[in-house]
Image 1 (cartoon, one colour):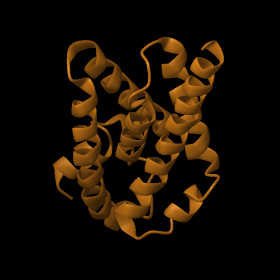
Image 2 (cartoon, helix red, strand yellow):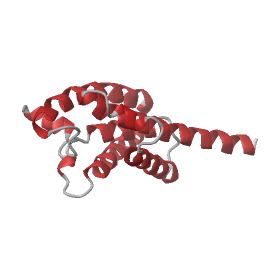
Image 3 (spheres, helix red, strand yellow):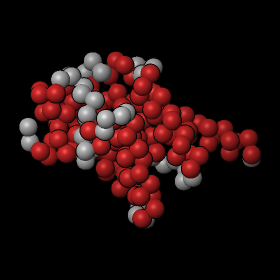
Image 4 (cartoon, helix red, strand yellow):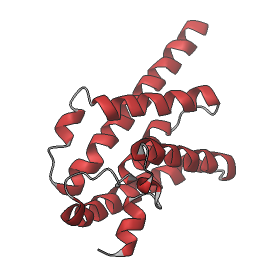
Length: 155
């Protein structure tokens, strides 16, 4: 196993957490998204770029590690990082929206409703990454709908 696959797939080592590595990986993704929002003027295109880049790198590295670590190993958390980025994409700043994105993403990731579980059946890294991508999309859509309903009732 190449060290860079381990470094990438474990979210810079977050996946080695002895307690709740998926949650720790999602928190790491949340922190990166918050830092981008704070320090980069064009944070939305930057986050989209990172989502695309790390999705494909995650598929590749997860494929490599699955050979030695088994199917969908808990140490692989790059999927949680990318899923969290998707959940936070284009949501307003503020701790309430950030917390909502985190909680909704983790709920969808853990319980896997609405076709999320089907994504795990995809082979290798595709299955590892796609269930979290879909969980992130669902979390984001719920927040966007809430925002739309909230602004619609104020106007």
